Amino acid sequence: MRLLERGHVDVVELQAGRGEWFCALAWARLLGEQGRQADALELLAPYLATGWWTAVVAAAELLERWGRVDEAIEITRVRMEAGHPMALESYTRLLARHGRAEKAFALLRPHIGELSLAEALVDIAAAAGRDEEAAALLAARTEHQCSDFPWCCRGLDRDTAIGLLATIRERQGRTDEAIALLRTGSTNGEQLAALLARHGRLGELRAAAATDDSRYAVQRLARLLEERGDVEGAIAAYRQADGPVAHDPNSACELAQLLARHGRGNEAINVMRVQADARNGDDWILHTLSDLYLDQGRPEDGLAHLDALAAARGGEEEWDLYWIRLPLIAARDGVDEAIAQARSHLEGATSYAAPHIAELLAGAGRTEEAVAVLEQHASTNSHDLAGYLIDLGRVEDALAVLQRRTPRPPELSDGTWRDDPPF
Image (tube, rainbow, N blue to C red; front, side, top):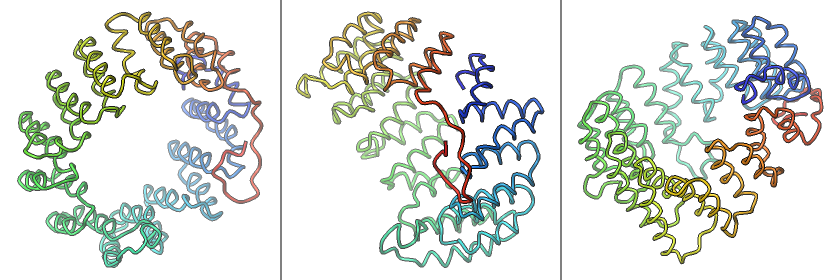
């Protein structure tokens, strides 16, 4: 995609003919858009001939997009009959999208005990006019008591069956019945909260949020209130006494993002400061906090807080935590100072430090220097290095980095399906 974004269409075309799958797929899409569908299919034919499922899916999507539905159905059917475990779902969903839902339902019905196929059956049932039949099949599954999840039920445990049955009831307009069903399950809190929000059942959603330990009801309540313009109510939903923010860093992060969206960035920082202090060393919390400091133009305060947290951990920081401070240093003292400090770190010359240093340089418009940094560790940073080389117009160098081994043509299938690229 980067080659196309930078206008190197000719390079993509060339590599498409040399066994590079991603170039072949991108070029086939372009050919289709130009009305050259036969050329596109000819390009993909060697990959399809291997039986590789990824190529089958890509070709079927293109054929469907071009309106050649029967051909899309046929190539998917062939893989289904060869026994690929994902082909039945793809085949039946394709049938249902094009007026053959009853046939799709009949094919799926014997597989009600398999999770992904049960989900497909529920989705297809309405178009097939078979909602009640699907509901009966699922109702029978709600009696199952797992003894060795997921092996004993292939993932379609009692609560999942309840959730799928509730989906049908909601679709039928039987909302109260769907809600009652979900309340009988022990793991359906997220689906219940989403259903209550969709139907504007604010009172019930508030009640669920007051007793919900999973945070989903609070999240949905806050989102609904924010959509209705009640920002204070949304904030209060997170801040209720003994609420999820007090115990769950994910909820705290959601509250911080809510505050930041409404111009209350300093309050957002305070929320995440509490989390960082309580969970000193959790990198994603430190990332979130540092980004908030940057967004509020307070890099010096961010660095001071990170320094205090590092001191509490004993003063030494491994690279996976240290590099979080680099954008703050760059914002306060400039990119050169950030790079100097990065290189002074014990791990600053490692292959995993190189991408962070390169990102600073590239962000400052110094892409050549970024390339020089990554070239010292090209084998472990080939993707990043190639991207910067393409940005500089050094396409041949980028290809040389990515193509350490000469691509070989796809191997023909022995009639079975395969998941690994056969080339």
